Image (cartoon, rainbow, N blue to C red; front, side, top):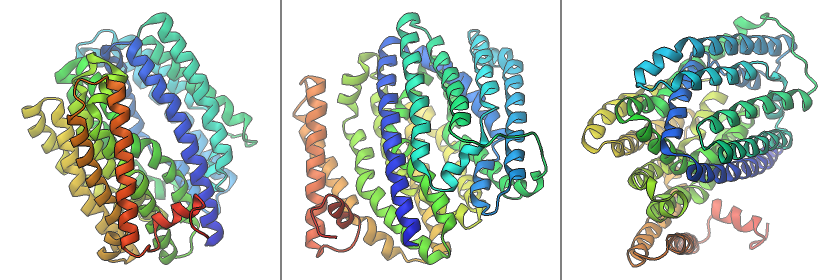
Length: 484
């Protein structure tokens, strides 16, 4: 187990580094594009990608996860996955072309036809990616995964920003997306020696696990993207653009910091021998995520107004309350993302489907009620409501499988939660006194003060609690403050 944990820890460092660099570049790209393009441009592309996402769901069997979980995967399994990916990509490309005119009529947006035709090219290119790169994760070789991500991101960044500067149009976004997929496919063959062949010899075996993943991915699509259809239909491209950028900024902790951890934990948990080992690793990760990532999400909520003013400009002022609410929801989501990795590693993908269904049964009625009353901001209230209930559902399912007590959960998270509460109060008090100050100075002052208050509170509580084992001690040891 120690060997697996060490490789997981190394993998997490590589994946978080990759994600931070990747999203650092992505965030710079988003901010530059927000200056060069209009909300309408983002909304138009979001309409098309939402339809593409819906098509993704129809074939989202997550065969790569089946290969990772299957300890004795053979060439025929890899060839089957590659062949199915090619078939699916070709079908999606054709479907996007066929749906272009109906979608334009649905949204009342004739420009959508050309956008969807270009998007179909992206699916066509992506269909031929080398499935052999899944072994980077399967064998916990995340240094190669890091290199794979970096080459793709840098190429996409240069093309997208250059095109936006020259065109000042949504076509820049599409050009960047297509080139990014082309680079990914090319690098998948350069970096891995596997050469796929057409074949479907292992299709039945793979579908035993992946049929549940299809359902889970469909439910996940509705969870994350279902409201984009509603917002696009009733609030237009500009309203959808505000929501899309708000969601991306506010969910940075869960999408950009925790997501790379999940790429490591699932293959790591899958290699562990029993639930006791998984439980120990699960709580180690829960403590680290709560300590390091929860305050980032709540911090974004606390500084939403100066953040929008400084980074996006006055034309995005509608995003302030939406970012604040969605950031709280995203911070809570970040603490729960490893639950699904546990369920899948234990061969129980149906647990994901059950929890996702319960979440949606809360989310969509809440979207209807809150958006009628609060407009686009109501989407934030709906997601926050559903997420608060989801915490109890997810932790209950994991508790049943790993057989731990609620007291262990409380002992793991209470100090960071208390620190976040104190931080939020301190930043609110300080920000009220900085009204009218330059937005950049206000943002930096609020952020710095919040970080200091949080760290001081958490480590004061840790000392008062007799310095127990946990995430605080791990961090101090890594920083060489405490002896190993």
